[in-house]
Image 1 (cartoon, rainbow, N blue to C red):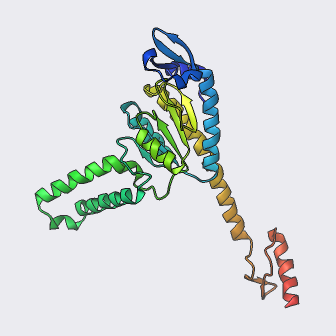
Image 2 (image 1 turned 135 degrees about the vertical axis):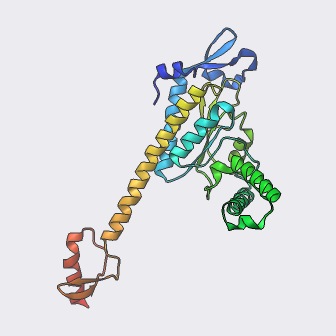
Image 3 (image 1 turned 120 degrees about the vertical axis):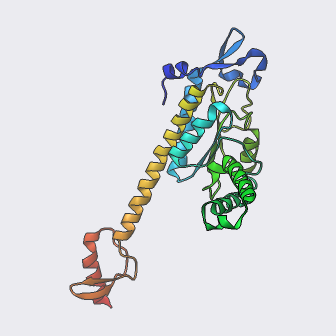
Length: 277
């Protein structure tokens, strides 16, 4: 978790001008300086911990988090952190229906793949130069919009958003589907409907980077536990004989009656099973 000093250095405490505030953010405002609201970073730190606990549990369950941030200050951070965690993201433009009409979005992904195939294989020879230029233009546009969701094959378990006011379409779709939302939200934002809000400067690149990487770290920590659990279960499954499995004991093929809890018990159990048959 970032220290208070790091948050201050990143400018996380700077809110918006007083006249632009949303009164619903009052509980998270410390004071006002030069007509600018100052966010209470002690509360922010507490809420980051709540969000991290949730995303860690999300990772431990093997669920997927979806990162969204299309404003200029967030684009690079969202892409880098999503790629680090190997999760879907949107950092250019939210297309309506990315969640609520996923079938249509999937069709657009297939269209992109078709264009890419035309441009990179022998099929290219079947088209005129002008047609190829048009195909490449359409492919580039699709890639820009869909780059982060190309491999998304299921609904996310949660959505992380930088500035829910800017990403109101994404937030609305997630709320409609009951997908929990974690959001960096400034003093001008509306916390209603946000499951895990993080009051902070959502216009500062350093603040966005600090918070986003911390959330992704927690998610990856949980995901690592999940992967270890799956690996252990698979290993145990391979080591234990399934019911009815034929194994060789003392030169004889016998059928194991039940799954043993320890490999050392298997020969004895198998011999007993052989005697009963």
